[in-house]
Amino acid sequence: MQRLICFLTVLSVASLVVAQTREELVRGDKAKVEAEGFWIYNDLPKAFEEARRTGKPIVVVLRCLPCHECVKLDDELVDTDPVIRPLLEKFVCARQVSTNGLDLSLFQYDTDQSFAVFFLNADKTIYGRFGTRSHRTDWVQDVSLEGLGKALQAALDLHGNFDEVKASLAGKRGAPMEFASPEKYPSLKGKFTDALNYKGDVVKSCIHCHQIGDARRDFYWKARKPIPEKTLWPYPHPKSVGLMMNPDELATVQKVLPNTPAASAGLRSGDSIASFNGQPMLSTADVQWVLHNVDPDGASVPLVVNRGGRTTNLSLSLDKDWRKEGDLSWRVSTWGLRRIAAGGLVLNVATAEEGRPKDLSRDAMALLVRRAGKYGPHGTARRVGFREGDIITSFDGRRDLMTEQELLTYVATSKNHGDRVAVDVLRGKRRMSFKLPIQP
Image (cartoon, rainbow, N blue to C red):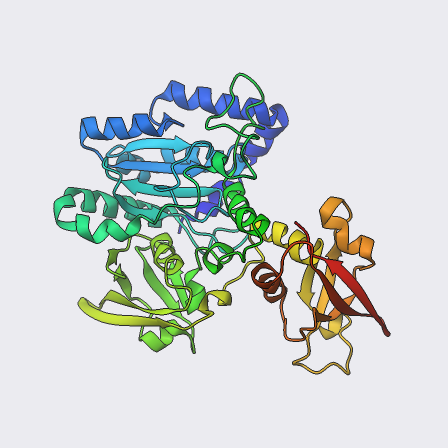
Protein backbone atom coordinates (compact mmCIF):
# COMPACT_ATOMS: atom_id res chain seq x y z
CA MET A 1 0.00 0.00 0.00
CA GLN A 2 1.33 3.42 -0.96
CA ARG A 3 0.88 5.70 2.02
CA LEU A 4 1.13 9.44 1.59
CA ILE A 5 3.53 9.48 4.49
CA CYS A 6 6.04 7.59 2.35
CA PHE A 7 6.40 10.66 0.19
CA LEU A 8 7.13 12.93 3.13
CA THR A 9 10.47 11.45 4.12
CA VAL A 10 12.61 11.69 1.04
CA LEU A 11 16.25 12.60 1.54
CA SER A 12 16.30 14.97 -1.40
CA VAL A 13 14.13 17.34 0.63
CA ALA A 14 16.77 17.57 3.33
CA SER A 15 19.47 18.50 0.82
CA LEU A 16 17.17 21.14 -0.67
CA VAL A 17 16.56 22.69 2.74
CA VAL A 18 20.30 23.03 3.35
CA ALA A 19 20.84 24.70 -0.02
CA GLN A 20 17.98 27.20 0.17
CA THR A 21 16.44 29.57 2.68
CA ARG A 22 12.70 29.45 3.28
CA GLU A 23 12.31 32.61 1.21
CA GLU A 24 14.19 31.01 -1.69
CA LEU A 25 12.07 27.87 -1.43
CA VAL A 26 8.82 29.81 -1.69
CA ARG A 27 9.97 31.86 -4.65
CA GLY A 28 11.53 28.83 -6.32
CA ASP A 29 8.35 26.80 -5.91
CA LYS A 30 6.30 29.53 -7.58
CA ALA A 31 8.74 29.83 -10.49
CA LYS A 32 8.91 26.05 -10.99
CA VAL A 33 5.15 25.44 -10.93
CA GLU A 34 4.35 28.39 -13.17
CA ALA A 35 7.03 27.32 -15.66
CA GLU A 36 5.61 23.79 -15.85
CA GLY A 37 2.13 25.18 -16.43
CA PHE A 38 0.15 22.22 -15.08
CA TRP A 39 -1.12 23.87 -11.90
CA ILE A 40 -2.74 27.28 -11.62
CA TYR A 41 -0.70 28.82 -8.83
CA ASN A 42 -2.39 30.81 -6.06
CA ASP A 43 -5.04 32.20 -8.41
CA LEU A 44 -8.44 30.68 -7.64
CA PRO A 45 -10.46 33.17 -9.75
CA LYS A 46 -8.43 32.04 -12.78
CA ALA A 47 -9.16 28.38 -11.89
CA PHE A 48 -12.92 28.96 -11.77
CA GLU A 49 -12.79 30.93 -15.02
CA GLU A 50 -10.91 28.04 -16.68
CA ALA A 51 -13.43 25.54 -15.33
CA ARG A 52 -16.31 27.54 -16.78
CA ARG A 53 -14.52 27.72 -20.13
CA THR A 54 -13.62 24.02 -20.35
CA GLY A 55 -16.48 22.39 -18.47
CA LYS A 56 -13.99 20.53 -16.28
CA PRO A 57 -14.33 20.16 -12.50
CA ILE A 58 -11.74 21.83 -10.27
CA VAL A 59 -9.33 20.28 -7.79
CA VAL A 60 -7.84 22.73 -5.31
CA VAL A 61 -4.91 21.64 -3.16
CA LEU A 62 -4.40 23.84 -0.13
CA ARG A 63 -0.99 23.23 1.34
CA CYS A 64 1.44 25.16 3.48
CA LEU A 65 4.54 26.92 2.19
CA PRO A 66 7.28 26.81 3.24
CA CYS A 67 6.42 23.24 4.19
CA HIS A 68 9.09 21.02 2.68
CA GLU A 69 7.01 17.89 3.23
CA CYS A 70 3.99 19.29 1.41
CA VAL A 71 6.13 20.50 -1.49
CA LYS A 72 7.47 16.98 -1.95
CA LEU A 73 3.97 15.57 -1.63
CA ASP A 74 2.70 17.72 -4.49
CA ASP A 75 5.74 16.89 -6.65
CA GLU A 76 5.15 13.18 -6.18
CA LEU A 77 1.43 13.43 -6.93
CA VAL A 78 1.98 15.27 -10.18
CA ASP A 79 5.22 13.84 -11.51
CA THR A 80 5.45 10.18 -10.55
CA ASP A 81 2.16 8.51 -9.67
CA PRO A 82 0.76 6.65 -12.71
CA VAL A 83 -2.82 6.70 -11.38
CA ILE A 84 -3.05 10.22 -9.95
CA ARG A 85 -1.60 12.15 -12.90
CA PRO A 86 -4.09 10.95 -15.56
CA LEU A 87 -6.97 11.70 -13.20
CA LEU A 88 -5.66 15.19 -12.44
CA GLU A 89 -5.50 15.90 -16.16
CA LYS A 90 -9.31 15.69 -16.23
CA PHE A 91 -9.53 18.58 -13.73
CA VAL A 92 -8.60 22.22 -13.67
CA CYS A 93 -5.81 21.97 -11.09
CA ALA A 94 -5.11 24.79 -8.64
CA ARG A 95 -2.53 25.04 -5.88
CA GLN A 96 -3.22 27.48 -3.07
CA VAL A 97 -0.11 27.96 -0.93
CA SER A 98 -1.48 30.59 1.47
CA THR A 99 -4.85 31.51 2.92
CA ASN A 100 -4.53 35.26 2.33
CA GLY A 101 -7.80 36.39 0.76
CA LEU A 102 -9.27 32.88 0.89
CA ASP A 103 -13.07 32.78 0.56
CA LEU A 104 -14.08 31.30 3.92
CA SER A 105 -17.69 30.95 2.86
CA LEU A 106 -16.48 28.30 0.41
CA PHE A 107 -13.21 26.84 1.71
CA GLN A 108 -14.03 25.47 5.15
CA TYR A 109 -11.77 22.67 6.40
CA ASP A 110 -9.74 21.51 9.39
CA THR A 111 -7.21 24.34 9.64
CA ASP A 112 -4.94 22.36 11.98
CA GLN A 113 -3.84 20.54 8.82
CA SER A 114 -1.29 21.78 6.29
CA PHE A 115 -2.72 19.76 3.38
CA ALA A 116 -6.36 19.76 2.25
CA VAL A 117 -8.04 19.03 -1.10
CA PHE A 118 -11.35 20.30 -2.50
CA PHE A 119 -13.19 18.94 -5.55
CA LEU A 120 -15.57 21.54 -7.00
CA ASN A 121 -17.82 22.48 -9.89
CA ALA A 122 -17.29 25.79 -11.69
CA ASP A 123 -20.41 27.16 -9.96
CA LYS A 124 -18.64 26.52 -6.59
CA THR A 125 -20.69 23.46 -5.68
CA ILE A 126 -18.43 21.21 -3.60
CA TYR A 127 -18.23 17.56 -4.64
CA GLY A 128 -16.09 16.55 -1.69
CA ARG A 129 -13.01 17.01 0.46
CA PHE A 130 -9.87 14.97 1.00
CA GLY A 131 -7.19 15.13 3.70
CA THR A 132 -7.48 13.92 7.27
CA ARG A 133 -5.19 14.01 10.25
CA SER A 134 -5.26 12.55 13.76
CA HIS A 135 -1.63 13.08 14.75
CA ARG A 136 0.72 16.07 14.70
CA THR A 137 3.06 14.62 12.08
CA ASP A 138 1.85 11.12 11.12
CA TRP A 139 -0.76 10.83 8.35
CA VAL A 140 -0.28 7.12 7.70
CA GLN A 141 -3.54 5.85 9.20
CA ASP A 142 -5.67 8.56 7.61
CA VAL A 143 -4.82 9.08 3.92
CA SER A 144 -3.18 7.27 1.00
CA LEU A 145 -2.57 7.74 -2.69
CA GLU A 146 -5.01 4.91 -3.42
CA GLY A 147 -7.69 6.74 -1.48
CA LEU A 148 -6.95 10.02 -3.23
CA GLY A 149 -7.17 8.37 -6.62
CA LYS A 150 -10.57 6.90 -5.80
CA ALA A 151 -11.80 10.25 -4.46
CA LEU A 152 -10.69 11.97 -7.68
CA GLN A 153 -12.59 9.39 -9.77
CA ALA A 154 -15.68 9.69 -7.56
CA ALA A 155 -15.62 13.48 -8.00
CA LEU A 156 -15.43 13.00 -11.77
CA ASP A 157 -18.42 10.65 -11.57
CA LEU A 158 -20.44 13.24 -9.64
CA HIS A 159 -19.43 15.91 -12.15
CA GLY A 160 -20.64 13.72 -15.00
CA ASN A 161 -24.06 13.43 -13.32
CA PHE A 162 -24.15 16.96 -11.93
CA ASP A 163 -27.79 17.75 -12.67
CA GLU A 164 -28.95 14.58 -10.92
CA VAL A 165 -26.75 14.93 -7.82
CA LYS A 166 -26.59 18.71 -7.30
CA ALA A 167 -29.34 18.80 -4.68
CA SER A 168 -27.55 16.20 -2.55
CA LEU A 169 -24.39 18.32 -2.55
CA ALA A 170 -25.95 21.41 -0.98
CA GLY A 171 -24.91 20.40 2.55
CA LYS A 172 -21.24 20.22 1.57
CA ARG A 173 -21.04 24.01 1.75
CA GLY A 174 -21.20 25.57 5.22
CA ALA A 175 -22.77 28.70 6.62
CA PRO A 176 -20.72 31.92 6.40
CA MET A 177 -18.00 32.23 9.03
CA GLU A 178 -17.46 35.24 11.30
CA PHE A 179 -15.43 37.05 8.62
CA ALA A 180 -15.25 36.63 4.86
CA SER A 181 -11.50 35.99 4.67
CA PRO A 182 -8.68 35.38 7.17
CA GLU A 183 -7.01 38.81 7.07
CA LYS A 184 -10.28 40.42 8.23
CA TYR A 185 -10.21 38.74 11.66
CA PRO A 186 -9.21 41.25 14.36
CA SER A 187 -6.06 39.37 15.41
CA LEU A 188 -4.82 39.27 11.79
CA LYS A 189 -6.13 42.61 10.53
CA GLY A 190 -3.36 45.09 9.82
CA LYS A 191 -0.70 42.40 10.01
CA PHE A 192 -1.57 40.70 6.72
CA THR A 193 -3.17 41.59 3.41
CA ASP A 194 -5.27 39.54 1.00
CA ALA A 195 -2.23 38.46 -1.05
CA LEU A 196 1.34 37.27 -0.60
CA ASN A 197 4.00 39.97 -0.83
CA TYR A 198 6.42 38.74 -3.47
CA LYS A 199 8.02 42.21 -3.61
CA GLY A 200 9.03 41.96 0.04
CA ASP A 201 9.32 39.22 2.66
CA VAL A 202 6.95 36.69 1.15
CA VAL A 203 7.34 34.16 3.98
CA LYS A 204 6.27 36.64 6.66
CA SER A 205 3.35 37.83 4.54
CA CYS A 206 1.69 34.39 4.51
CA ILE A 207 -1.34 33.52 6.64
CA HIS A 208 -0.95 29.86 7.54
CA CYS A 209 -3.91 27.52 7.89
CA HIS A 210 -3.66 27.17 11.66
CA GLN A 211 -3.79 30.95 12.06
CA ILE A 212 -7.41 30.89 10.87
CA GLY A 213 -8.39 28.60 13.74
CA ASP A 214 -6.33 30.68 16.16
CA ALA A 215 -8.03 33.86 14.93
CA ARG A 216 -11.50 32.37 15.29
CA ARG A 217 -10.90 31.29 18.88
CA ASP A 218 -9.27 34.61 19.66
CA PHE A 219 -12.29 36.47 18.27
CA TYR A 220 -14.61 34.90 20.85
CA TRP A 221 -12.09 34.87 23.69
CA LYS A 222 -11.17 38.57 23.39
CA ALA A 223 -14.90 39.40 23.32
CA ARG A 224 -15.27 37.51 26.63
CA LYS A 225 -17.57 34.98 25.05
CA PRO A 226 -17.33 31.21 25.49
CA ILE A 227 -15.53 29.62 22.56
CA PRO A 228 -18.21 27.59 20.72
CA GLU A 229 -17.74 23.84 20.94
CA LYS A 230 -17.72 23.56 17.16
CA THR A 231 -14.78 25.99 17.08
CA LEU A 232 -13.02 24.45 20.06
CA TRP A 233 -13.53 20.83 18.92
CA PRO A 234 -13.50 21.12 15.11
CA TYR A 235 -13.74 18.32 12.57
CA PRO A 236 -14.05 15.33 14.91
CA HIS A 237 -12.11 12.34 13.69
CA PRO A 238 -14.41 9.37 12.93
CA LYS A 239 -12.66 7.35 15.65
CA SER A 240 -14.25 9.73 18.19
CA VAL A 241 -17.57 8.00 17.39
CA GLY A 242 -15.97 4.57 17.07
CA LEU A 243 -15.11 4.41 13.37
CA MET A 244 -11.69 3.45 12.05
CA MET A 245 -11.72 4.24 8.33
CA ASN A 246 -9.83 2.52 5.51
CA PRO A 247 -7.52 5.18 3.97
CA ASP A 248 -7.34 3.27 0.66
CA GLU A 249 -11.09 3.35 -0.02
CA LEU A 250 -14.01 5.76 -0.39
CA ALA A 251 -15.36 6.45 3.13
CA THR A 252 -15.12 2.75 3.98
CA VAL A 253 -15.18 1.36 7.52
CA GLN A 254 -12.09 -0.64 8.43
CA LYS A 255 -13.07 -1.35 12.03
CA VAL A 256 -15.84 -0.48 14.48
CA LEU A 257 -14.80 0.05 18.09
CA PRO A 258 -17.05 -1.63 20.68
CA ASN A 259 -19.37 0.32 22.97
CA THR A 260 -19.38 3.39 20.73
CA PRO A 261 -22.08 5.29 18.80
CA ALA A 262 -20.89 3.60 15.59
CA ALA A 263 -21.35 0.15 17.13
CA SER A 264 -24.80 1.10 18.44
CA ALA A 265 -25.75 2.31 14.96
CA GLY A 266 -25.01 -1.17 13.55
CA LEU A 267 -22.06 -0.16 11.38
CA ARG A 268 -19.72 -3.02 10.43
CA SER A 269 -16.23 -3.51 9.10
CA GLY A 270 -16.29 -3.28 5.30
CA ASP A 271 -19.32 -0.98 5.13
CA SER A 272 -18.91 1.67 2.45
CA ILE A 273 -20.70 4.86 3.51
CA ALA A 274 -22.47 5.99 0.35
CA SER A 275 -24.42 8.79 1.99
CA PHE A 276 -24.12 10.52 5.36
CA ASN A 277 -26.80 13.04 6.34
CA GLY A 278 -27.94 12.96 2.73
CA GLN A 279 -24.52 13.83 1.26
CA PRO A 280 -22.47 11.52 -0.99
CA MET A 281 -19.18 10.52 0.64
CA LEU A 282 -15.83 10.61 -1.18
CA SER A 283 -13.42 10.27 1.76
CA THR A 284 -12.87 10.29 5.50
CA ALA A 285 -12.70 14.10 5.26
CA ASP A 286 -16.30 14.09 4.00
CA VAL A 287 -17.32 12.04 7.03
CA GLN A 288 -15.58 14.60 9.24
CA TRP A 289 -17.42 17.44 7.50
CA VAL A 290 -20.76 15.92 8.44
CA LEU A 291 -19.63 15.27 12.02
CA HIS A 292 -18.30 18.83 12.26
CA ASN A 293 -21.75 20.20 11.50
CA VAL A 294 -23.76 17.99 13.86
CA ASP A 295 -25.68 19.99 16.45
CA PRO A 296 -23.51 20.55 19.58
CA ASP A 297 -26.23 18.96 21.71
CA GLY A 298 -26.21 15.82 19.58
CA ALA A 299 -28.48 14.42 16.90
CA SER A 300 -29.46 11.30 14.97
CA VAL A 301 -27.71 11.38 11.61
CA PRO A 302 -28.92 9.10 8.78
CA LEU A 303 -26.47 6.92 6.85
CA VAL A 304 -26.77 4.79 3.76
CA VAL A 305 -24.12 2.06 3.52
CA ASN A 306 -23.24 -0.46 0.87
CA ARG A 307 -22.78 -3.84 2.51
CA GLY A 308 -22.11 -7.00 0.52
CA GLY A 309 -23.79 -5.63 -2.57
CA ARG A 310 -26.86 -4.41 -0.69
CA THR A 311 -27.92 -0.97 0.49
CA THR A 312 -28.64 -0.58 4.19
CA ASN A 313 -30.14 2.44 5.98
CA LEU A 314 -28.76 3.23 9.45
CA SER A 315 -28.82 6.09 11.93
CA LEU A 316 -25.92 7.36 14.05
CA SER A 317 -27.15 8.73 17.38
CA LEU A 318 -24.88 11.25 19.11
CA ASP A 319 -25.56 12.47 22.63
CA LYS A 320 -24.55 15.76 24.21
CA ASP A 321 -20.76 16.06 24.71
CA TRP A 322 -19.98 13.33 22.14
CA ARG A 323 -17.60 15.77 20.47
CA LYS A 324 -15.33 15.79 23.53
CA GLU A 325 -14.38 12.18 22.93
CA GLY A 326 -11.88 13.48 20.38
CA ASP A 327 -8.24 14.36 20.94
CA LEU A 328 -7.03 17.97 21.00
CA SER A 329 -3.44 17.21 22.00
CA TRP A 330 -2.06 16.82 18.46
CA ARG A 331 -3.56 20.06 17.21
CA VAL A 332 -1.51 23.21 16.71
CA SER A 333 -4.43 25.08 18.28
CA THR A 334 -3.77 23.39 21.62
CA TRP A 335 -0.63 25.50 22.00
CA GLY A 336 -2.74 28.66 22.24
CA LEU A 337 -5.24 27.02 24.58
CA ARG A 338 -2.41 25.98 26.89
CA ARG A 339 -1.30 29.59 27.06
CA ILE A 340 -4.81 30.84 27.81
CA ALA A 341 -5.97 28.22 30.28
CA ALA A 342 -2.80 26.83 31.88
CA GLY A 343 -0.27 29.62 31.62
CA GLY A 344 1.92 27.54 29.31
CA LEU A 345 1.75 24.21 31.12
CA VAL A 346 1.70 20.93 29.20
CA LEU A 347 -0.17 18.32 31.22
CA ASN A 348 -0.40 14.53 31.24
CA VAL A 349 -2.45 12.17 33.38
CA ALA A 350 -0.04 11.19 36.18
CA THR A 351 0.85 7.52 36.39
CA ALA A 352 2.60 5.55 39.12
CA GLU A 353 5.77 5.63 37.02
CA GLU A 354 5.57 9.42 36.85
CA GLY A 355 5.19 9.96 40.57
CA ARG A 356 1.47 9.59 41.15
CA PRO A 357 1.11 9.15 44.95
CA LYS A 358 -0.09 5.72 45.99
CA ASP A 359 -2.69 7.22 48.31
CA LEU A 360 -4.49 8.94 45.41
CA SER A 361 -7.45 6.88 44.26
CA ARG A 362 -7.86 5.93 40.62
CA ASP A 363 -10.72 8.41 40.19
CA ALA A 364 -8.83 11.32 41.77
CA MET A 365 -7.68 14.22 39.60
CA ALA A 366 -3.92 14.00 39.03
CA LEU A 367 -2.45 15.97 36.13
CA LEU A 368 1.32 15.89 35.83
CA VAL A 369 3.10 19.07 34.73
CA ARG A 370 5.20 17.58 31.94
CA ARG A 371 6.49 20.93 30.77
CA ALA A 372 6.27 24.52 32.00
CA GLY A 373 6.94 27.25 29.46
CA LYS A 374 9.63 29.80 30.17
CA TYR A 375 8.95 32.82 27.99
CA GLY A 376 6.24 35.43 27.53
CA PRO A 377 2.62 34.42 28.20
CA HIS A 378 3.66 30.77 27.96
CA GLY A 379 5.88 31.33 31.00
CA THR A 380 3.06 32.62 33.22
CA ALA A 381 2.59 29.42 35.22
CA ARG A 382 6.34 29.08 35.82
CA ARG A 383 6.54 32.66 37.09
CA VAL A 384 3.64 31.94 39.45
CA GLY A 385 5.59 29.01 40.89
CA PHE A 386 4.67 25.86 38.94
CA ARG A 387 7.46 23.43 38.09
CA GLU A 388 7.85 20.28 35.98
CA GLY A 389 6.88 17.26 38.04
CA ASP A 390 4.11 19.01 39.97
CA ILE A 391 0.81 17.11 40.10
CA ILE A 392 -2.37 19.19 39.91
CA THR A 393 -5.10 17.79 42.15
CA SER A 394 -7.60 20.63 42.02
CA PHE A 395 -8.29 23.47 39.56
CA ASP A 396 -10.68 26.31 40.40
CA GLY A 397 -12.27 24.07 43.01
CA ARG A 398 -12.85 21.33 40.43
CA ARG A 399 -11.49 17.86 41.14
CA ASP A 400 -13.11 16.20 38.13
CA LEU A 401 -10.97 17.61 35.32
CA MET A 402 -9.27 14.32 34.63
CA THR A 403 -7.40 15.17 31.42
CA GLU A 404 -5.59 18.15 29.99
CA GLN A 405 -8.28 18.73 27.38
CA GLU A 406 -11.02 18.68 30.02
CA LEU A 407 -9.15 21.41 31.87
CA LEU A 408 -8.57 23.45 28.70
CA THR A 409 -12.21 23.07 27.65
CA TYR A 410 -13.45 24.11 31.11
CA VAL A 411 -11.51 27.37 30.96
CA ALA A 412 -12.34 28.13 27.32
CA THR A 413 -16.08 27.68 27.88
CA SER A 414 -16.61 29.04 31.40
CA LYS A 415 -13.85 31.52 32.36
CA ASN A 416 -12.62 34.85 31.02
CA HIS A 417 -9.20 36.39 30.60
CA GLY A 418 -8.27 38.29 33.74
CA ASP A 419 -9.83 35.67 36.03
CA ARG A 420 -7.58 34.03 38.62
CA VAL A 421 -8.11 30.42 39.61
CA ALA A 422 -6.86 28.52 42.63
CA VAL A 423 -4.78 25.46 41.78
CA ASP A 424 -3.70 22.80 44.29
CA VAL A 425 -0.61 20.74 43.53
CA LEU A 426 1.53 18.03 44.99
CA ARG A 427 5.30 18.51 44.77
CA GLY A 428 6.73 15.33 46.15
CA LYS A 429 5.10 15.09 49.56
CA ARG A 430 4.43 18.82 49.83
CA ARG A 431 0.97 20.24 49.18
CA MET A 432 1.03 23.68 47.59
CA SER A 433 -1.49 26.18 46.20
CA PHE A 434 -1.09 28.81 43.49
CA LYS A 435 -3.27 31.48 41.93
CA LEU A 436 -3.08 31.12 38.17
CA PRO A 437 -4.19 34.09 36.01
CA ILE A 438 -6.19 33.23 32.91
CA GLN A 439 -4.43 34.74 29.90
CA PRO A 440 -5.84 37.04 27.16
